[in-house]
Image (cartoon, rainbow, N blue to C red; front, side, top):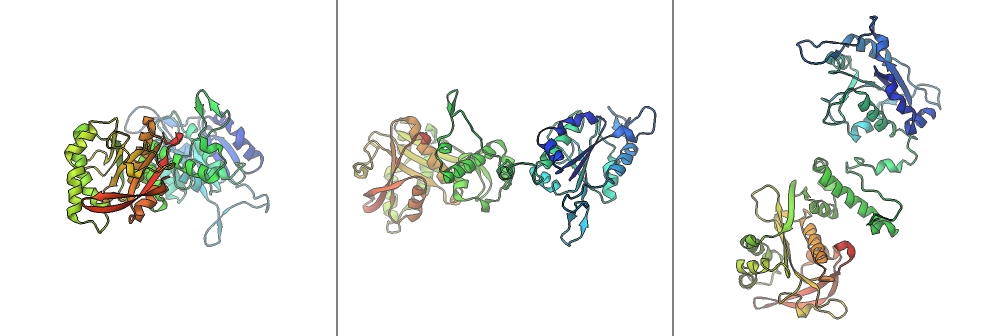
Length: 465
């Protein structure tokens, strides 16, 4: 590839002789030409600008000077392929060879320079970058070359204004140049970078020392479990992107995200299915007893087995899922932890909730205790429900993990245990995927009907907190 830069400050680009770009030129992987725009002026003052038509502040760079310069630079011979001794040209799908020459114009009014744009430009044979100054280049220059069927790419590197296009030109050279074959020593590093593949930001990186100023390298990176490391890195990429670049998350294809991905995004406040939404997971307030009770009564029947009658279900809800019961529990946050999920900025009701009991009279039921498996002092995850509309969104997993982390942060319990009906295979698989294991069974009464539950338990670890 050949990159030509046209500027009134040619010395600005001395930095391209350094580091990877310098080595790429020495190896013949990249040819860089720097051209002084003033060489194409025709007056003794070497004038490249003039006052704008219509008035206004600043000066505009002249179309005639730029036209002469670009005509010449766009006609320069292309670098030869070292294996054939002939110009290395792009092959079209039809098999014909042609030179792909691109005129790139950095401008604050251009579309953003993205990794996708850089990847596309890396397939060009020549990129000519026109570095404007002052109030920019006469618009007729870009329009003329487009009219002549020249490929013109106007681009911006951010929502701010610089003194000239040279900085943006350096950005483009580096973004494109490092994608050329052989420029970066380890090509795998290009795949894992920010904006590559799905458009996620890159995960955080760590090296020696293992502990620095009270901060340790994440334990998962030290264990040698490559599958766990890969999963951790993807999780961190998803969370980082959700927090820093929600616009990139909005562009993700939901079909390419597995359920774990969706749960990670939901925990970071972003949901893509059943629709794109920002959500909030938080502790319920004391004044929300009525809203939580209403949601609990709506969702409890969803998990009930078919053999339970409506009367039995109603009797249970009238005893345990009343506004008064939730008001009592919300007033006792030391023993009762209630988390809720809702869509941000909307008038929608709750979309999910969890109830975890850390101790007290509502704590771990004696019939769930299993010697050596489930301790009497384990936290009891009594409820974890999400409205049917939001099933598959990842909200359930996000709520569950937040509830577990909340228990760990309180420091009172070393386990979290729960019971789920033996016929509810979906729920059992869900909890097992989140680190819960089978510890036994219990009989749980709903009204006058015996309901058999699997008892599941998860031991808390430092990472849960």
